[in-house]
Length: 136
Image (cartoon, rainbow, N blue to C red; front, top):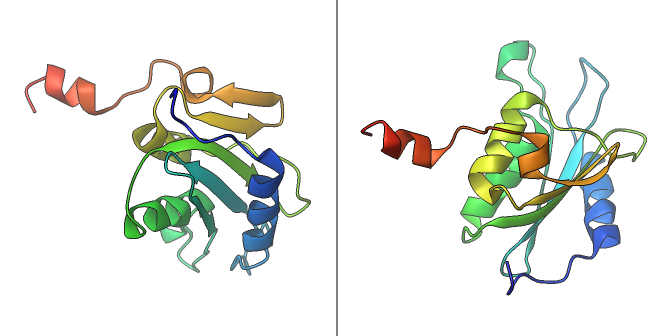
């Protein structure tokens, strides 16, 4: 990541808080926003979108990763996720896997315990190399 852009954590937090205000959370009343820095310097973001059929609710990270790919792809370098109070929020397990797939082991994420790498957040992660190793 030697060529990675500098991380403006406050800009990521501000975008996460902004997009959290767009969340559709009528059932849980738990809005979530997330912003990620891409390796080319772009910031992508997303908010949660609930559904009466709870199982098809979209987490904020899903929207962010969709925007990542829709706007040109790349790799996530840093991620900041917030809840309704604007404080750092740890992504759920599914979203940790999504962040691993799109940022990898070195991607940084702000957590309630401080900034950690995805390798710290999702140890022994499963990814594309595992598929290759088992004859994809």
